[in-house]
Every structure is written in C-alpha cells, then in structure tokens.
Image (cartoon, one colour):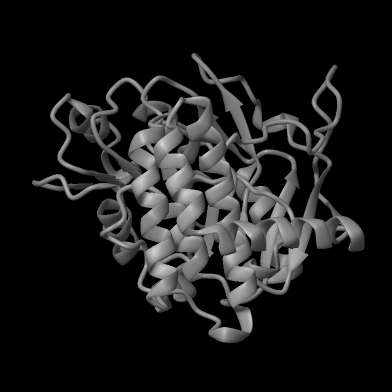
Length: 326
C-alpha cells in the first residue's frame, strides 16, 4: 500500500456556494501521496449534494447532527492515515503549489508543525496556475512553537501538523467554539520543530461577511477561555515555559482589546486587560526583548522545478498576510 504523506481535512457547514473551491483546490495538488477527507457537519443548504458529486475522489463523511467545527475536524483526523494533517476550512482553498512547498519543508527540516502564509482575497477565488509555482520558499525554523518571535496567521487553513503529535495532544478541543486555532497551537507549544512560512502563500483565506473573526463581542469570551485554560494548567511546559505562554496569550489579549476598543466595547475591553494585565505585560516585554535582540533570521529553500510567475514579481513575505495573528 503506498505511503500517504498528507491528509487534507476539509470541514464544512452550510457552505454550498463555497465548498467547491476548497475541494477543487485539494484535488488540484500535484502530490500523489495525498488523501482528501471532507466532513460535512450536518449542513441543511445542499452542501452534501455538491460533495456527493465528487464520488470516490474524496472520502466524504456526513454527520447527522451539528457538532461544531472542532468536532468535525477531529472526525476527519480520526480517519486520516497521512503522516501530516493539512487542515482546510470550507470557505478557504489551497494554492496549487501548497503541498509542493510543504513537502520541501518536510524533507529539509522534519517539522512537527508548519504555520502557512495566507493569501487574503474577497469575492472570486484568485487565479493561480500550477505552472506558476515559486522558485523558492522562505521560512523561519523554531525549536518549538513557544519560541516563535514573529506574528503568524491564525486560522485552521494555515496549520499543517504531524498526525502523531496531533493525536498526542488530543486534537482540537471540542469545547472551543472560537479561538480553537490558538488553543491548538498552545497545546502543541512544546511538541517540537515548528516552521513559519514567510513566502510564498500556500492557502487562500476568503474575507467575507460571515468570517467568525469579525464577531468581536462573540470572540471576547473565548479569549477568556484560553486564559482560563492556561490558569488551569492545560497547556504544556510547566513553570519553565510560563513566561513564553503568557507572552503569547498576552498578544491575543492586546489584539482583541484593540479590536474591542475600535468597536466601542470599552467596558468589556478594560475588564479583559484589568483582569489579565500580567499576561499583557509579558507580551509587551517579549516584544521589547525581540526588538533589542533581533528576530531569528529567515532561510531560503529552493523549490525544484519552480519558476517565477510570468510577468509578476517573485513572492515576498508582505503578500497574503492574514489579519488575525497567532
């Protein structure tokens, strides 16, 4: 039986008008050692009818009751046989060279987790031809996630995780409705080598009216949930890694506090900061230390057979950055 390198896990719920882009982008990958698992979380809008048209090209799981996105992703992960899990939300898509880039990184660094660069867009999916693959990929290599000294995209579609490591931390927390990507990253914090991709983007992130990250009042309680998880000792590393954990979580606090203030949620925002100021202070302190010491330098990996898109500039790390950060 051939080895499966990647299991692409697509979770969807009531995304009839968008899911085809996600599935087609997975089917267009040039890596043969891949399986595609699509979990529909009890859609009622005809999404399942669209998915059934793919037949045996995908492994389709149709849940009878809606269990929220983390449960759907875990359902797909249980069925996966690939060495690495590539998560993809039903309203996003993979860039044609995504698995090529991930494969190059894996061959070179043997990571436990990869955090991808995102290409943000609105409306129609941008055209990115497989033949226009990049010449190289620019990465930062960290001993583990907690040592990350740069912001990174926050969404399931940016995460590629070693399947055994994913299983060892219990997968996605089923009790997390929002901030579940941050929660998983914190659970994976000491799991081993983590790669942050600076360029090129490997996933399309769709900006639309229903993005969960636009619901600021709805997000704030889940920021508090991550804080409670830390105080309950649910994240690894013990006392030795406490400052690093607090700095990461403090970054979440400051990000959402800023957004809350812009939305006029002054009482909720002030309460968030007042109750958790040591973590916010840790984030500020870490940022100052990084500025003084300098960030870890990136390295460039050549892409076999890659080429710069005709008539376009080579990819730079300024392109395709997601607005929400880990």
